Length: 317
Image (cartoon, rainbow, N blue to C red; front, side, top):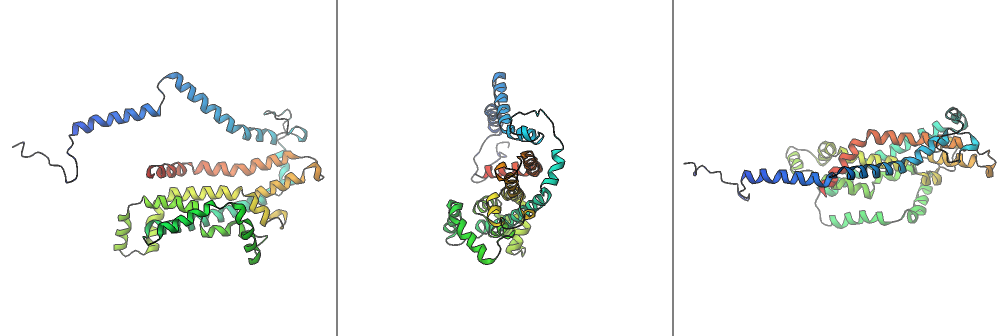
């Protein structure tokens, strides 16, 4: 009677005894622990020393910048990490010397427009490549990826002529308008994420009467928040640090309309002795530090989504 009640495995599934699975699982977990953690105490100490060394190397420019911002004019470039003469009033005087607040607000507004535009447009295009199946989809997607092979110097002059003909030179539009058409790298990133979503979710929504926009906005987007935030952070940082585009399209405007990178470059020229300045580079150091802080805060708050999105992409291969 007991033999007649023996469990029969489902079709296509191997008949494996529970004891075998119970034996193999601890072995695999032990193997993972062995390759992830050093065995000996000396190896752990060596790993900690290497990590601390790399951390100090990467932190040195930031520490040097903080020290230089607290020095008087003649000691800015003495390479001492502890100032001989502390000048905390530099952080007060910089607001009188430079329109730093205007530069930062301009950079924040442009970066928000650029990041939002490219994140939404790239997500829409990526969803089309991931969901719809049509002839030539692979070749068309390959052409999109091929645009990443074009150097920026090749397209710089044609893009400049386009914005000149449209009459947007000297405005913010060239700094974020191109992002309305997506980015090849971000399209690839979002497409890989969308391909990992179960297609059954979209088929069930289609049976319930959802349109294509409903599939994207109500199903794909809520499930792709980590990758969306990654794209947003990447583009926000790229736009925030984009000196070249601001130098090309905003150089003809007033100083108050500059972005933060262009304003710092202007300050370097303003205080240069060769240009009639007095070498007050301590204000440039303060401005550079103040401009760096928003990026540190942004990545501190978005670190969880950043790690989650990268780990998800890694699991999908």
